[in-house]
Length: 118
Image: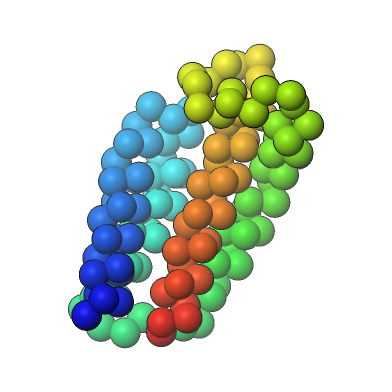
């Protein structure tokens, strides 16, 4: 029962994440990523999901997250870490890259939970 509640919560949470991406510089990609993660969780409430498919999705998101490591690394080397909580500044692309990197890690962590429960 607790597992179903967690799956429902995570599924709805990622659907909300997808819905609020409309003002992102690349909204369709992030709506698709978060939407797929949310849908996988919601489908898992109705029937078992393939562990192989969930594993593939985790690997795909981790590989994609590698493209954001340079920006994340730049943010780590900055003295002011709170920049990622403010608005996007176009002369500081590492802010958006850090947010996207962390978002992918959150999605992978959630999917890893589902992988373990499958």
